[in-house]
Amino acid sequence: MNPPSTTKIDTNKLYKITFGLAIFTIAYNIIEGIVSIYIGLHDESFTLFGFGVDSFIEAISGLGIAHMVIRIWREPNACRDNYERTALRITGVAFYSLTVGLVVTGIYNFYIGHKPESTFWGVIISIISIVVMLALIYWKRRMGKALNSDAILADAECTKVCVNMSIVLLAASAIYELVKIPYIDAIGTLALAYFSFREGRECFEKVKYNNHCGCKSD
Image 1 (cartoon, one colour):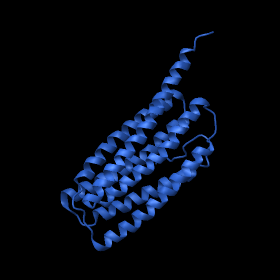
Image 2 (cartoon, helix red, strand yellow):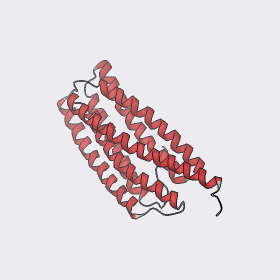
Image 3 (cartoon, one colour):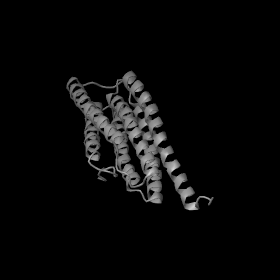
């Protein structure tokens, strides 16, 4: 029996790392979602609460990504299967539902002039999220280039949306914490709704693609 080639061993190692990144992303988003929702409700910060709900949806999306990694690990040229398409549709519907909830909440809170009790933890959570997501983008790009995988590279591009949402949370939380500008939490909620809508739309766009994420880089 001939020993496995060094190239095959290296490729398997790279796929194991990529799969580990997908599992880490799921676990991180679940923890982030629990913490954000709990503190968001406690401090009446609806931007943080919406961010937490988004984290849970990202965890669901992560299940599809983990499955994608296994698929291309086994067969790099295999097309997107029914499991991934179903996961994308479920995730897309969840993002659209979140968009409606955020818009209604944001408009209502803007109308009544709601002010959160504190947004301190929104600042902390958003900074941690930005650091973690940027690290994930770096490693996903590194693995994608090493494996010459457009699908993994595209997934790295999709992760940029998480960074954008974290920046929205950071801006809304920091501005309110520093200068207590009225309505800033409501505005932050509406900004999250925009990105949630984009993610929902992109989920349904991905269904049309066989291998690639289908995300836009802008």
